[in-house]
Length: 384
Image 1 (tube, rainbow, N blue to C red):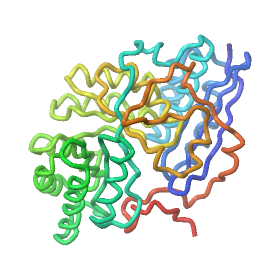
Image 2 (image 1 turned 135 degrees about the vertical axis):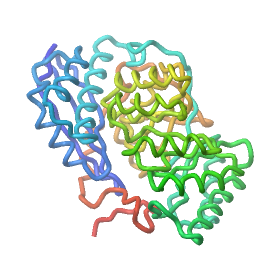
Image 3 (image 1 turned 45 degrees about the vertical axis):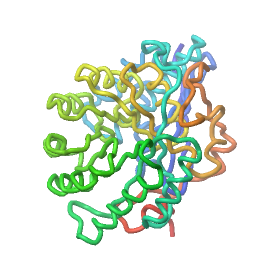
């Protein structure tokens, strides 16, 4: 079997353009994948096509060789943009392999260890940044059966917060805890916002609300900063979604202070690369909660990892709180029932693109999430 072509499709979700690919072969089997990267849909798309010479004509049963040719052999490191392009081709190869062998991908990566996996809701708090809004929306999430939910209460803060803004953020955390009660996990998102000292100040103040974790409180570029926070924080720190190589994960793990890892299958190079990170975390008694703030194909990828990773913890899930037409973009979309995802047994990723629906939602350059702009919580397009 040989890879013969690659097609790319950008879907204009108002708060983030989704990028999907379809990899063709000379035997008529195709694989799909996702390469979404917030404001860089067109850039990653161009990267995929620019690297075609590194995978067209190769056997899709060689995803490691293809990944190496696309990343190492071109010498220059294009960071997350580069790795998302690599990931999309790698994932599509695994989809082809699974379809060819008539097995789901997780059976090729150690086999199934989890029959179902617990999910946490994200994207549910779209609306005004008030304790009242967060309180009501959190209640609705619990009514839907979720036993865990994540949110960013910090507005457009960067590095520091004034006392008024800090007080509002703490009131929002308190409102969510009050809404969901003591037996639901609340996960506080930091979105790489703070200096180490500010992050520690906030961690100490949210401790009384018993958050399951405080996620990425400092920028990912400076690993020693988040290590410093994790070493002194009374709240567990979660991190890893922004890292794009296993070497960065190794640097993070060697300090043995962060034990909730959040590899993003698209940022870190694909399914097998993510599975390797899971094992690295396991060697440090760490658990994994794969990051997934993208589209429905990324959700299918994360479920493949969750099925076969012995140290899987919990899975992020946006799909239920995105645009209502998202579920029509793919066949057999991932579903959450009573807070859990049942592991599907369909071949490959278990989903395929509905190209008619994909083509109904065109790209727009204003479709991205501006996390340091007032009102980003509304998740409205920045298009004028």
